[in-house]
Image 1 (spheres, rainbow, N blue to C red):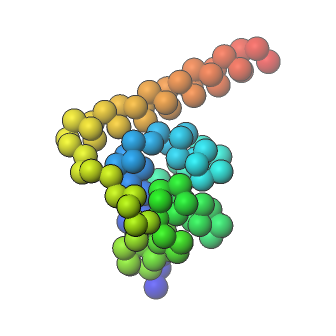
Image 2: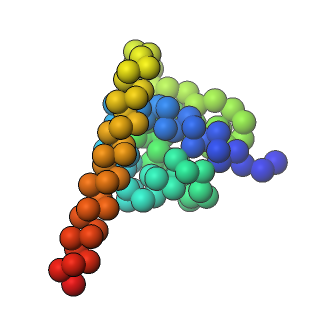
Length: 115
């Protein structure tokens, strides 16, 4: 059975937004590089240990990300389920992510000009 990375990507992004985390903030909680977190959200293949870290950052029970890859559902840690996001909250979360990406691009441009 082929891992369902697209489904995992959707679940991870939805949970991160529901928890009010940016990609960078989630990566910090997971102790992974921001690019690694982005790779998860883009459905790229990542290491199993990264998936364990995703579980921790998203307050999912251990093994939840792997379960999603196999067609199951993530299991939130008891008491960790945030209130449902409104459409406005979702739009704000997406804008926040885009701003974070732009900020990173500006920083990369500044760094390349210094070199």
